[in-house]
Image (spheres, rainbow, N blue to C red):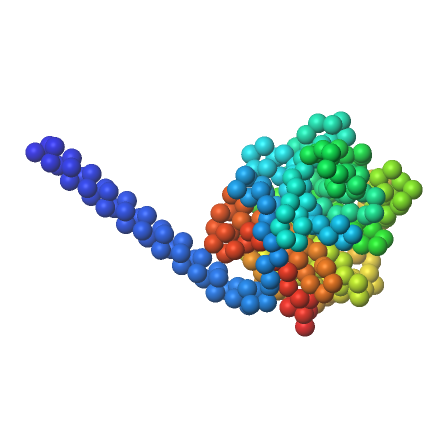
Length: 335
């Protein structure tokens, strides 16, 4: 009789477990279906450019850049678990090379490798409060599977993403109240009443400098939370990629000319530099995109977008087809 009771208990537990698993799968499926329906406008307007390499091996994509003369995309990120900094050089048809990054001492660079951008001479990769400077040509040499930094400098913030325009290297930070705080001096109430808690430092490009930039920032942008990527577009538009698990992802577009009409100041080191505000007054538009957006770049009149959600940390992303770099026309974001 005891044996029969035990079998009955086991059967009941097995049935209960099956019901729980089945219910969980139904809920998960409903969530994915809901997200796909929510983003139908995105799927209808965006184009899959190519698949991000290295995802099955634990690569966590973060930054996106494009080298026009070489027709090659650079995707920065890190290896899940080891935090080894990696860059993939990817062609338009999806062929790629993996490059390990090394610190100035020739040792493997271990950090939450974030954004990537370049000038004619240098490639900049940011992470852990620093900007690492690499020789541009080394990324296209077939001789070594690694690239060594020639210099590094302090970014004066968390250094989560970066971009270059014709005058400046911008290095910004990601703020989120759970696990991603920023310095209290970066918590700023803007003239429009918004409370921004992150900053983007602007470093003047300088070909005569060993780092290709003046390593002291010349001005700072006060930015909202959850920013993972940025690009400055000719014609006075500034695009930001915002992302978090619970609030999804958005592209914010600002009137960059209007931003620079209203300034304050922020203390950096022993001095003060001009402060400009990215806030609701200069915000032009907000557009929902796929979850866990990261680096963005503008090529021609199309915005290219990278997503972390397809990495092994967020496997649900592959069910949303977020393992691709997507592009969408500018008028999808700015009417």
